[in-house]
Image 1 (cartoon, one colour):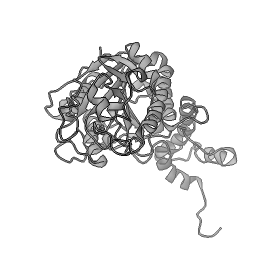
Image 2 (tube, rainbow, N blue to C red; image 1 turned 60 degrees about the horizontal axis):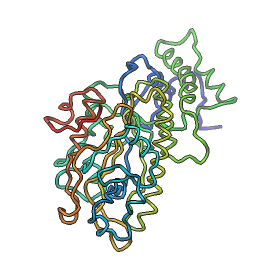
Image 3 (cartoon, rainbow, N blue to C red; image 1 turned 180 degrees about the horizontal axis):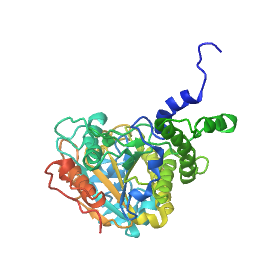
Image 4 (cartoon, rainbow, N blue to C red; image 1 turned 60 degrees about the vertical axis):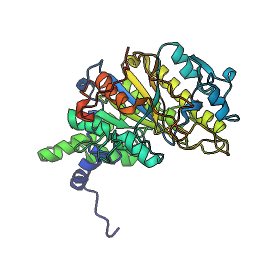
Length: 396
């Protein structure tokens, strides 16, 4: 065929160094595949952070529900849950009925709820509010994410932070280092005759230069590591939702002993301006089932894992005319793990002392980030948050 260069061994080795290095990542950075399973670079007891982002602005008042507050019922006569509908948490609060697994974790002392989390001068824009959460900079725009700055400060290994999402979230992008992305279904490499041809093209040869020998070795590594990774990323049952698949992949990687310290995943659809109750309860049910399966699947490795679930903002107190809620401010954050400080942290926001119809935040999200950096990632928060002094105790 004219115009198409032959796939010679030399040409293959020229290009496969790039292909092999990027086969695992979604363009987030060059990562050698052998790094992913280099468990000897991570102490066996090193804590792992899993971040779950709820995109769209989850309604915190119908997630951790203040059924004991008359103002809640008055503000949402059709949208409000009744006390007998919710999963009791005490203190006049209850979990959404779609979250029985998290309720079990609460009763088992493995769930903490940080109340009223937000930031000063809130912004109702999805884009701007999420940018604030991801950069940890409410007052000025910055080009780096809060965990990207952690990566910059603590080394240049992009495997230490991995996203299971289709694109790298901005909070994993630093000035010099960025995290990586992988697909939850694992690595799909050529098989049959084509796969065998690739293996032969990457085989070692006594005539190779040192550079060509390293590339040939990386091709062999690609297949051997792919087999190990794919065993760790065992396929979830058919019909499994994206979040469940992503968390199952994370669980497999944690149990396989990979060197990653931070994982990111997400669930969208929480922009419930109309007919909220059914939509949100369905989404929270998906979240609940995915998190419950994730915690169960970790086994003994769960003692190292802290999972944080957050959204860019909550919703307004009063329901709108479409039986939904509009963009608001503060909301609850879930912290899940064997070693978390269970129960409530932070003050419950008032439903009557409002800021133009919005909740006033009672916990600054940077307090949470500072504690994550210090208690989970073992890093001085000052290198990321610059003299921020607030904290929310996370681990018991």
